[in-house]
Length: 403
Image (cartoon, rainbow, N blue to C red; front, top):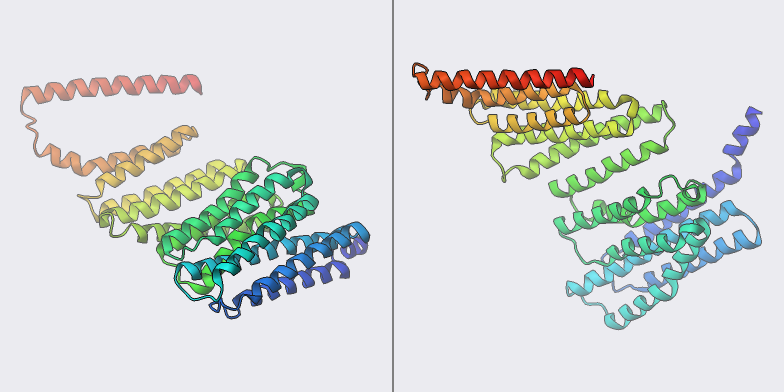
């Protein structure tokens, strides 16, 4: 029985389909990257267009004639990737035209390529989604078309590229968020269709890493996308498995990268005294948010994130005792509010202590300006202590009643 199960999961036919699909994807990548800047060689676009049609036809034949759903799924998934490859090539031509690079008969060819987009590529994508995820074919085609259209934008600057990649990743994620429990998307065909929605973002990312050097902003964008993707994937992994642990380690590592990139990006815009609190609050907040996907360990993640933020902020206060108070108060307030919202008293206490420590430099400076021998000062201090005691007693009774 165990041997039969192993054979079913790891059959020779399945291995051959996987290897064949990887070879086709490798061929597409080589086709795109070979002579990337030679956009006058537009025969590549039409060769890829013909390949897209062949893949779609092969998927139809395998599905409707040979009744081989697995091979049909593979060909149609490759057809979606091929559509994205064609859009990438068309985007390259538009970029060449915008930047004034000479392309023979460019306007005519651009018109022909634009016509092929509506006459060939969109019908192929619609057919693929119709087979892979029939109940969502129309809406998935709309999302796929919108995200693929981002490949046509002629932007290559750091800020624009980062925002475009973020949009290409966020739009499908927002679409799928409302359909997370849909049965049609949990099948193998549905997962292939979902992967097709993210194909444009993956192509943009590959193009970026191949052709350009990522700066702090792009690093922040890409690591943020990777972090939230890892948080999305955690729902698909078996509970209490080694993959959950690996995913957690990867997520924490990405949180550190996001913190470093965000801090480097903020350098030059904020005072040096605020850099370490920005790093600590960012990383701590991301670690805290990881508990949202782990209800059983939510309090544990909250403690780790809160104490991470608090410890570095307090260390920054010791390094910059006079100027670090404001950042300490702000981080402490955020931690205390987060703990209050999740009703975790230890975190509320940590935030309150951090706020108190942050107010210490200003309190010392203020104390030097106050005349404690004056009767009015003593009276105000006495009234303040009475009011503070009343507030504390009220909060204590409310906490006891709720508990």
